[in-house]
Image 1 (cartoon, rainbow, N blue to C red):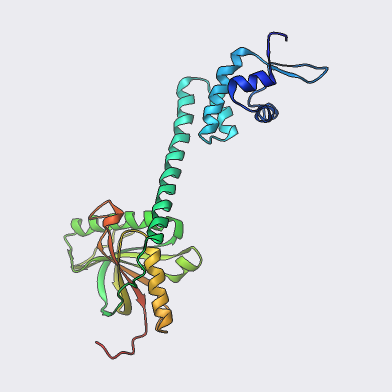
Image 2 (spheres, rainbow, N blue to C red; image 1 turned 180 degrees about the vertical axis):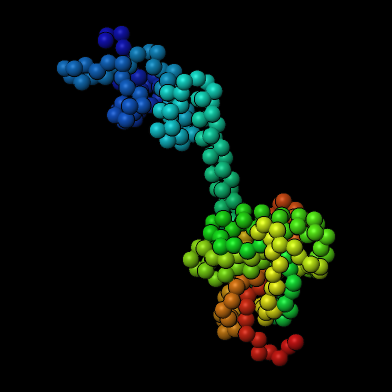
Length: 272
């Protein structure tokens, strides 16, 4: 094939390295137009250049080789565009996750050295409307937002009167083993009619060490509060508790959320 491009020339034209072209040949992504049976030299046709350019751009977008092959083999433009759009959606999701991680790291590095103010509080039992379920730790934020929205809708639909901020109880297993029971609740006055996963629930009384947290990186405040209770030897077993003074129901911006975090403690200070 004297009119073909050698692998070196094709590499220079397409900006795909010789090593990469060899790999694409081996995996069947971009095979040479001809391979000399005597010396094994590979030759590419000029009309393979556009295909190579498409491959280069898709790989620059971190599309897996198998998905690139699927795009090239798509029967029509609609199918091809659907595959590319799905990959772009995955990239955007990953980008959002990366941005969240970067913001979280910056918050950690810029966090003031001053310790948070801890309040010891006696919390009475409360009649609530609630949703409870075993939850994977990775899903807890999405579950929390959905459950909280459903509870607010239930309170409105049943004509209940909220008597305090919404809240949550989270079993230790959720943090220790990445799965455990979570309960989201709204304290109310009135008869709660159980519908679907919504049910009445009496949140038990508790002695708590409480810190107010602003924003979404709640793990940092949990660390401070846990260190405080351990240092003072007052930590006891029991679910961790949160009260949402300002949450996703009030603003979609996590920076505007305000949460009271409660850690169960043994109180021996004689305060009411």
